[in-house]
Length: 313
Image (cartoon, rainbow, N blue to C red; front, side):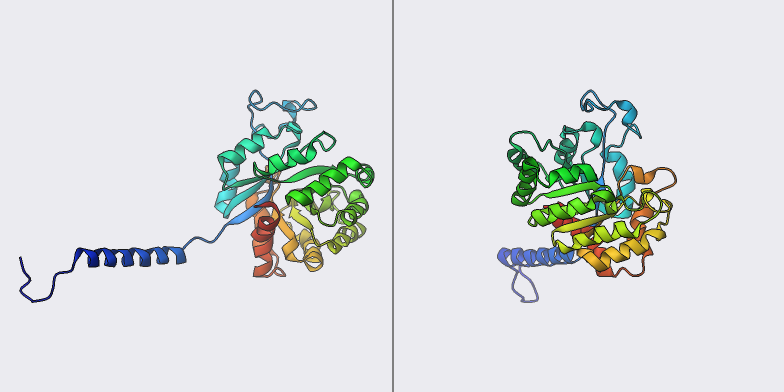
Protein backbone atom coordinates (compact mmCIF):
# COMPACT_ATOMS: atom_id res chain seq x y z
CA UNK A 1 0.00 0.00 0.00
CA UNK A 2 1.47 3.40 -0.95
CA UNK A 3 1.21 6.61 1.04
CA UNK A 4 -1.25 9.10 -0.42
CA UNK A 5 0.92 11.99 0.90
CA UNK A 6 3.70 11.15 -1.52
CA UNK A 7 6.28 10.96 1.31
CA UNK A 8 8.72 8.01 1.00
CA UNK A 9 8.38 5.08 3.34
CA UNK A 10 11.05 4.82 6.06
CA UNK A 11 13.44 1.99 5.33
CA UNK A 12 14.12 -0.75 7.87
CA UNK A 13 17.68 0.56 8.13
CA UNK A 14 16.49 4.05 9.03
CA UNK A 15 14.11 2.66 11.62
CA UNK A 16 16.91 0.66 13.24
CA UNK A 17 19.18 3.71 13.26
CA UNK A 18 16.48 5.83 14.84
CA UNK A 19 15.82 3.19 17.48
CA UNK A 20 19.50 2.99 18.33
CA UNK A 21 19.68 6.75 18.72
CA UNK A 22 16.73 6.76 21.10
CA UNK A 23 18.27 3.93 23.14
CA UNK A 24 21.60 5.75 23.32
CA UNK A 25 19.88 8.91 24.45
CA UNK A 26 18.00 7.02 27.13
CA UNK A 27 21.22 5.37 28.23
CA UNK A 28 22.92 8.75 28.60
CA UNK A 29 19.97 9.99 30.63
CA UNK A 30 20.27 7.02 32.96
CA UNK A 31 23.99 7.62 33.31
CA UNK A 32 23.34 11.20 34.36
CA UNK A 33 20.88 9.99 36.98
CA UNK A 34 23.18 7.24 38.25
CA UNK A 35 23.15 7.02 42.01
CA UNK A 36 26.05 8.64 43.81
CA UNK A 37 28.29 6.17 45.66
CA UNK A 38 27.21 5.61 49.22
CA UNK A 39 29.22 5.88 52.39
CA UNK A 40 31.85 3.40 53.58
CA UNK A 41 31.87 2.13 57.15
CA UNK A 42 35.56 1.41 57.74
CA UNK A 43 35.25 -0.82 60.82
CA UNK A 44 32.66 -3.49 61.56
CA UNK A 45 32.82 -6.93 63.16
CA UNK A 46 30.55 -9.81 62.17
CA UNK A 47 30.10 -13.30 63.56
CA UNK A 48 27.69 -16.20 63.51
CA UNK A 49 26.24 -18.35 66.29
CA UNK A 50 27.11 -21.38 64.15
CA UNK A 51 30.30 -22.37 65.93
CA UNK A 52 30.24 -25.80 64.31
CA UNK A 53 30.84 -24.39 60.83
CA UNK A 54 33.01 -21.56 62.19
CA UNK A 55 34.80 -22.66 65.38
CA UNK A 56 36.06 -20.13 67.88
CA UNK A 57 39.75 -19.86 68.68
CA UNK A 58 41.21 -21.98 71.45
CA UNK A 59 41.25 -19.05 73.88
CA UNK A 60 37.52 -18.28 73.50
CA UNK A 61 34.13 -19.86 74.11
CA UNK A 62 30.56 -18.78 73.36
CA UNK A 63 30.43 -16.58 76.45
CA UNK A 64 32.65 -14.14 74.55
CA UNK A 65 29.99 -13.69 71.85
CA UNK A 66 28.04 -10.66 72.99
CA UNK A 67 25.69 -10.22 71.25
CA UNK A 68 25.31 -13.89 70.40
CA UNK A 69 24.97 -13.10 66.71
CA UNK A 70 25.88 -10.26 64.35
CA UNK A 71 25.63 -11.53 60.80
CA UNK A 72 25.78 -9.49 57.58
CA UNK A 73 21.97 -9.40 57.39
CA UNK A 74 21.77 -8.04 60.93
CA UNK A 75 24.39 -5.44 60.04
CA UNK A 76 22.58 -4.35 56.86
CA UNK A 77 19.47 -3.52 58.88
CA UNK A 78 21.48 -0.70 60.48
CA UNK A 79 23.83 0.36 57.68
CA UNK A 80 21.62 0.49 54.60
CA UNK A 81 19.04 2.98 55.93
CA UNK A 82 21.93 5.42 56.55
CA UNK A 83 23.24 5.20 52.98
CA UNK A 84 26.22 2.95 53.78
CA UNK A 85 26.74 0.52 50.92
CA UNK A 86 30.34 -0.61 51.47
CA UNK A 87 31.89 -1.93 54.66
CA UNK A 88 35.34 -2.94 55.88
CA UNK A 89 35.13 -6.06 58.01
CA UNK A 90 37.61 -6.40 60.87
CA UNK A 91 38.44 -9.98 61.82
CA UNK A 92 36.79 -10.70 65.15
CA UNK A 93 39.19 -11.56 67.95
CA UNK A 94 37.45 -14.72 69.08
CA UNK A 95 38.11 -16.38 65.72
CA UNK A 96 41.81 -15.56 66.26
CA UNK A 97 43.75 -16.22 63.01
CA UNK A 98 41.00 -18.27 61.36
CA UNK A 99 39.62 -15.66 58.95
CA UNK A 100 37.18 -18.04 57.24
CA UNK A 101 33.90 -16.43 58.31
CA UNK A 102 35.05 -13.00 57.20
CA UNK A 103 36.42 -14.36 53.90
CA UNK A 104 33.18 -16.23 53.20
CA UNK A 105 31.22 -13.01 53.76
CA UNK A 106 33.49 -11.14 51.34
CA UNK A 107 33.04 -13.89 48.75
CA UNK A 108 29.25 -13.76 49.17
CA UNK A 109 29.06 -9.94 49.01
CA UNK A 110 32.08 -8.90 46.91
CA UNK A 111 30.66 -5.46 46.13
CA UNK A 112 29.89 -4.75 49.78
CA UNK A 113 32.79 -6.07 51.84
CA UNK A 114 36.55 -5.85 52.11
CA UNK A 115 38.51 -7.23 55.03
CA UNK A 116 41.20 -6.65 57.63
CA UNK A 117 42.57 -10.02 58.71
CA UNK A 118 44.49 -11.33 61.71
CA UNK A 119 47.51 -13.49 60.93
CA UNK A 120 50.42 -14.93 62.90
CA UNK A 121 53.27 -12.63 61.98
CA UNK A 122 55.78 -15.14 63.33
CA UNK A 123 54.56 -18.02 61.14
CA UNK A 124 56.66 -19.07 58.15
CA UNK A 125 55.59 -17.80 54.73
CA UNK A 126 53.96 -14.62 56.02
CA UNK A 127 54.44 -12.71 52.78
CA UNK A 128 52.86 -15.52 50.75
CA UNK A 129 49.95 -15.57 53.20
CA UNK A 130 49.50 -11.82 52.79
CA UNK A 131 49.54 -12.07 49.00
CA UNK A 132 46.97 -14.86 49.07
CA UNK A 133 44.65 -12.94 51.36
CA UNK A 134 44.95 -9.86 49.16
CA UNK A 135 43.41 -11.87 46.33
CA UNK A 136 40.48 -12.71 48.63
CA UNK A 137 39.63 -9.09 49.40
CA UNK A 138 41.85 -8.49 52.44
CA UNK A 139 43.40 -5.03 52.39
CA UNK A 140 44.83 -4.82 55.89
CA UNK A 141 46.04 -6.65 58.99
CA UNK A 142 45.00 -6.02 62.57
CA UNK A 143 47.58 -5.82 65.32
CA UNK A 144 46.89 -5.27 69.02
CA UNK A 145 49.27 -2.55 70.15
CA UNK A 146 50.16 -1.65 73.71
CA UNK A 147 53.38 -0.09 74.97
CA UNK A 148 55.12 -3.42 75.71
CA UNK A 149 54.29 -5.13 72.42
CA UNK A 150 55.07 -2.18 70.17
CA UNK A 151 58.40 -1.59 71.88
CA UNK A 152 59.40 -5.14 70.99
CA UNK A 153 58.23 -4.73 67.37
CA UNK A 154 60.71 -1.98 66.54
CA UNK A 155 63.61 -4.45 66.26
CA UNK A 156 61.62 -7.59 65.43
CA UNK A 157 62.67 -9.29 62.15
CA UNK A 158 59.27 -10.95 61.87
CA UNK A 159 57.45 -7.66 62.29
CA UNK A 160 59.78 -6.06 59.75
CA UNK A 161 58.80 -8.75 57.25
CA UNK A 162 55.12 -8.01 57.82
CA UNK A 163 55.42 -4.21 57.62
CA UNK A 164 57.64 -4.34 54.53
CA UNK A 165 55.33 -6.95 53.02
CA UNK A 166 52.31 -4.72 53.53
CA UNK A 167 54.08 -1.93 51.66
CA UNK A 168 54.83 -4.36 48.82
CA UNK A 169 51.29 -5.76 48.58
CA UNK A 170 49.53 -2.42 49.07
CA UNK A 171 47.85 -3.50 52.29
CA UNK A 172 47.59 -1.54 55.54
CA UNK A 173 48.80 -2.25 59.06
CA UNK A 174 45.76 -1.49 61.24
CA UNK A 175 46.57 -0.88 64.88
CA UNK A 176 44.12 -1.24 67.74
CA UNK A 177 46.38 0.73 70.03
CA UNK A 178 46.38 2.14 73.51
CA UNK A 179 47.67 5.70 73.88
CA UNK A 180 50.80 4.44 75.64
CA UNK A 181 51.82 2.66 72.42
CA UNK A 182 51.96 5.84 70.34
CA UNK A 183 55.66 6.67 70.94
CA UNK A 184 56.71 3.22 69.69
CA UNK A 185 54.24 3.44 66.79
CA UNK A 186 55.98 6.68 65.83
CA UNK A 187 59.29 4.78 65.69
CA UNK A 188 57.72 2.07 63.53
CA UNK A 189 56.25 4.62 61.12
CA UNK A 190 59.67 6.24 60.85
CA UNK A 191 61.34 2.86 60.24
CA UNK A 192 58.78 1.77 57.63
CA UNK A 193 57.69 5.01 55.91
CA UNK A 194 56.35 3.21 52.83
CA UNK A 195 53.87 1.17 54.87
CA UNK A 196 50.28 2.37 55.06
CA UNK A 197 49.21 2.58 58.71
CA UNK A 198 45.72 3.00 60.16
CA UNK A 199 45.18 3.91 63.81
CA UNK A 200 41.83 2.54 64.98
CA UNK A 201 39.41 4.46 67.21
CA UNK A 202 41.57 7.55 67.84
CA UNK A 203 44.10 5.18 69.50
CA UNK A 204 41.37 4.81 72.15
CA UNK A 205 42.08 8.29 73.50
CA UNK A 206 39.19 9.16 75.82
CA UNK A 207 38.25 5.62 76.79
CA UNK A 208 38.72 6.66 80.42
CA UNK A 209 36.15 9.40 79.90
CA UNK A 210 38.78 12.14 79.63
CA UNK A 211 40.67 13.14 76.50
CA UNK A 212 44.24 13.64 77.66
CA UNK A 213 46.05 16.41 75.81
CA UNK A 214 49.39 14.61 75.95
CA UNK A 215 47.88 11.53 74.30
CA UNK A 216 46.36 13.65 71.55
CA UNK A 217 49.73 15.36 71.06
CA UNK A 218 51.35 11.96 70.55
CA UNK A 219 48.69 10.92 68.05
CA UNK A 220 49.12 14.14 66.11
CA UNK A 221 52.87 13.52 65.85
CA UNK A 222 52.03 10.67 63.46
CA UNK A 223 50.78 13.22 60.93
CA UNK A 224 54.44 13.64 59.99
CA UNK A 225 54.14 10.33 58.12
CA UNK A 226 52.04 10.78 54.97
CA UNK A 227 50.85 7.17 54.87
CA UNK A 228 49.46 7.17 58.40
CA UNK A 229 45.68 7.53 58.86
CA UNK A 230 43.24 7.66 61.78
CA UNK A 231 39.79 6.19 62.21
CA UNK A 232 37.34 8.56 63.85
CA UNK A 233 35.23 5.78 65.28
CA UNK A 234 33.86 3.92 68.31
CA UNK A 235 32.13 7.03 69.61
CA UNK A 236 30.13 4.91 72.08
CA UNK A 237 33.38 4.09 73.95
CA UNK A 238 35.05 7.48 74.21
CA UNK A 239 34.56 10.70 76.16
CA UNK A 240 31.03 11.00 77.55
CA UNK A 241 30.06 7.86 75.58
CA UNK A 242 26.59 9.20 74.82
CA UNK A 243 24.90 10.52 71.69
CA UNK A 244 25.22 12.97 70.04
CA UNK A 245 28.96 12.68 70.93
CA UNK A 246 29.60 16.40 70.48
CA UNK A 247 32.26 16.30 73.19
CA UNK A 248 34.47 14.48 70.66
CA UNK A 249 34.21 17.42 68.26
CA UNK A 250 37.36 19.24 69.45
CA UNK A 251 39.47 16.09 69.06
CA UNK A 252 38.09 15.49 65.57
CA UNK A 253 38.73 19.11 64.65
CA UNK A 254 42.34 18.95 65.76
CA UNK A 255 42.90 15.75 63.80
CA UNK A 256 41.28 17.30 60.72
CA UNK A 257 43.54 20.32 61.05
CA UNK A 258 46.65 18.19 61.63
CA UNK A 259 46.20 15.19 59.33
CA UNK A 260 43.71 16.61 56.86
CA UNK A 261 40.33 15.03 56.23
CA UNK A 262 41.85 12.90 53.46
CA UNK A 263 43.67 10.88 56.14
CA UNK A 264 40.68 10.42 58.45
CA UNK A 265 37.92 7.85 58.02
CA UNK A 266 34.64 7.34 59.83
CA UNK A 267 33.66 3.94 61.16
CA UNK A 268 30.96 2.64 63.47
CA UNK A 269 32.64 -0.30 65.25
CA UNK A 270 29.42 -2.28 65.09
CA UNK A 271 27.91 -4.20 66.74
CA UNK A 272 29.13 -2.34 69.82
CA UNK A 273 27.89 0.97 68.43
CA UNK A 274 24.29 -0.24 68.54
CA UNK A 275 24.15 -1.19 72.20
CA UNK A 276 23.37 0.54 75.52
CA UNK A 277 21.48 3.51 74.10
CA UNK A 278 23.90 4.11 71.24
CA UNK A 279 22.78 3.90 67.62
CA UNK A 280 24.25 3.54 64.16
CA UNK A 281 22.39 6.65 63.02
CA UNK A 282 23.91 8.72 65.83
CA UNK A 283 27.41 7.57 64.90
CA UNK A 284 27.30 8.57 61.25
CA UNK A 285 25.31 11.72 62.06
CA UNK A 286 28.20 13.13 64.12
CA UNK A 287 30.35 13.40 60.99
CA UNK A 288 27.60 13.90 58.43
CA UNK A 289 25.41 16.43 60.25
CA UNK A 290 26.64 17.64 63.64
CA UNK A 291 30.09 19.24 63.29
CA UNK A 292 29.81 22.60 61.56
CA UNK A 293 33.58 22.95 61.09
CA UNK A 294 33.59 20.02 58.66
CA UNK A 295 33.17 21.13 55.05
CA UNK A 296 31.32 19.10 52.44
CA UNK A 297 34.71 18.07 51.06
CA UNK A 298 35.85 16.98 54.54
CA UNK A 299 32.75 14.83 54.90
CA UNK A 300 33.24 13.26 51.49
CA UNK A 301 36.73 12.17 52.50
CA UNK A 302 35.85 11.00 56.00
CA UNK A 303 32.67 9.17 55.03
CA UNK A 304 33.90 7.56 51.82
CA UNK A 305 37.01 8.59 49.95
CA UNK A 306 39.70 7.93 52.59
CA UNK A 307 38.50 4.39 53.26
CA UNK A 308 38.10 3.89 49.52
CA UNK A 309 41.70 4.96 48.97
CA UNK A 310 43.23 3.01 51.86
CA UNK A 311 41.12 -0.09 52.43
CA UNK A 312 39.16 -0.58 49.22
CA UNK A 313 40.74 -1.80 46.02
